[in-house]
Length: 272
Image (tube, rainbow, N blue to C red; front, side, top):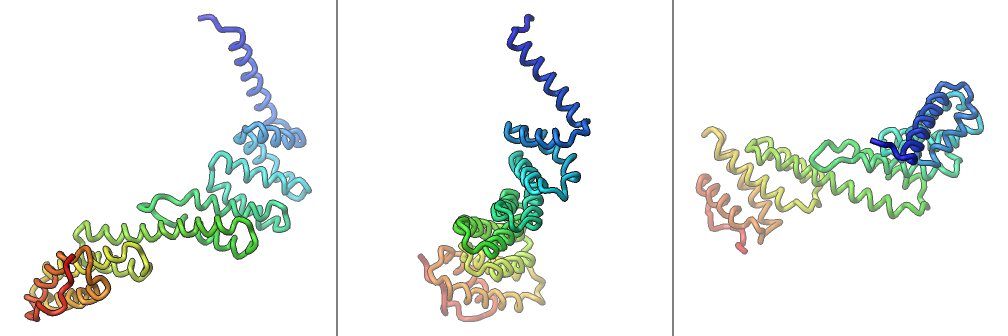
């Protein structure tokens, strides 16, 4: 197969470029390396810029160039979407150079890196909580920033993810038919997020879990647990008298009332 002249030229240039870069890595000319950091960054060759920065940053630590080099280092990591390292470098920059023109942006981008590391609701939400904290600190540090509305919107989005995580975790025990654990988890979720959009469903699941737990209990514990179910029933219908779960709630009440020998015609939920 014949190689076209233009292809040959491009291959030759690539080989030459790689050879020059390898020589640059081994070079002791730190001024040249520093210049190449900016050249590579401007050309979008962020990995090469990062690799050179790892060599020269210690040498320029106490110099006037240190601020700019550390900023480029954080930016390059952000460009390649290495949000974990970028967030660390941005925060270090903001702490080290609080008077810098880039300090506010560094603090914001550090929080944004945590935001980008926040996973879907089903997974561990440590990074979500960290992102909320980071945005909160940013808003306290820069109360007049033009980014405040953006930060508030992102915090609300992250908090909603925590609500969903709490809901999914609480529901998991119910779906697994671990009703005792479900009642605890559901109660904790309602306590932590009392205004959640899932409140009606969580309260119904808690009621149903208590009922099923009572039904499955040994005879000696049934009275106590059905009484707890009845108390939960009254709490539920007081808050949601015309719930979409009314039919199931009525069934739970009638079965519980029959077992406890109480009047089942009193305070029944209203059917839709």
